[in-house]
Image (cartoon, rainbow, N blue to C red; front, side, top):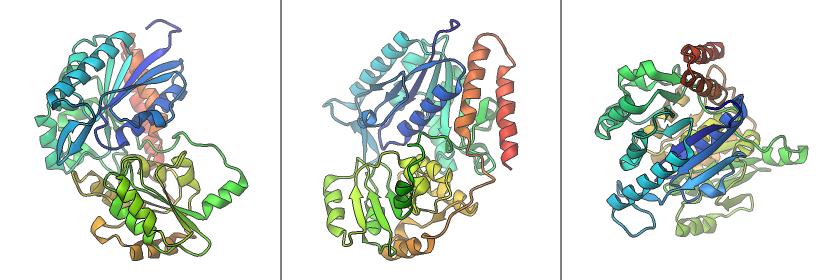
Length: 406
């Protein structure tokens, strides 16, 4: 890499369902742009058709792939009329062409080391000078399911052949996929725990006092992208709101139009309103009276970075990831939890009443992953240029930060 030339970074996520993978990569793009010592230019490769609605750092652009959707546990083309095999081949050619032309210094891949349907493999075989990183959320799935899928999908082979490091966006004192059995133990040697990607997410900045007072009298409900969030949103719009407070329920962009219409008809109080999108969600959560949400990684990271009371109603299918995450965090006293089978307007109303004057101290957990990641990225670049001990330095920095959080 030439001295003075911007560092080129690509962040890939397959994005067949929801916004989680893309939102995690967007948080990383801001972190890397701020935290590296040289200027950064980057490309976000995503299969999410809502990607253009979300802000990104200066000098970053989007490559939005023809999309997948998941129906009945199987992947299908979202819009194009073509068989799954043809869509996979089309996406693979687009990705390979983009990476060949852009020549990134670092490629960070979210969750799927081979890409969905193996779409990254043609490109990975040609990236001889790019440093490859696999990024994994804290929890993958129930251990036996996660490990079986790891081998069945070709992930293990792809990591062994192509990847330099694995970044796990978690605090191992809270949850380790090695200790739980979700990942093969032999991968521990090339893995780094970054801490949760919580503090330092892009925010609106300090609002004025009038806005802070308004937001402080408001409860929020988020159900992710919304495709399976109707039961939680329904309980929220029918729950009583404490006197003097408002409740804003966000359906997400993927909730079915008929479900959104049904929710609006259920609203029986002027204190409750329904919207499909809330800009600057992290800032709004920080000042809210309370948050009701499902158990996705990104929203919970935004909540953990604050002292806002949070009630989590995790989904239980198609995987147990959210259920496990919520249970672990609840056992640490960081959130409240309600099984999705038990959520009701009465339960939500009682919780809103209890938490309206309450804040939550969330210490003894490393929430600074977005501050740690640039050091790890820098070590990869330095190692690439010949300083072999740089990776050890970055790993020691992360270890010291973890110990200081205890």
